[in-house]
Image 1 (cartoon, rainbow, N blue to C red):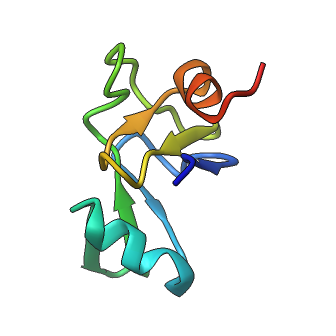
Image 2: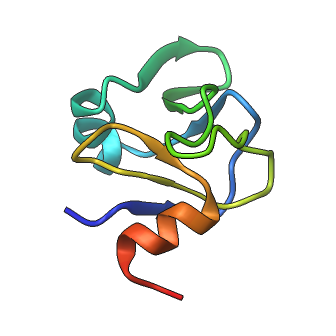
Length: 83
């Protein structure tokens, strides 16, 4: 499966997601629940699996559903075959 692009992160540690992405987040072992701000969140505080770049609030990032890794904009585009 191609990496999933998130338009912008909510913060450096997690981003709120909808029910449609819960299965993917569970499979990637990145689902977080039980917060007052919302029901489901994707954890990404460990940064890009390739280069270690941090995910910043308001910036795009990717989730590789096959590996469970988070990817920065550059490495996410590369994995998707985009320029």
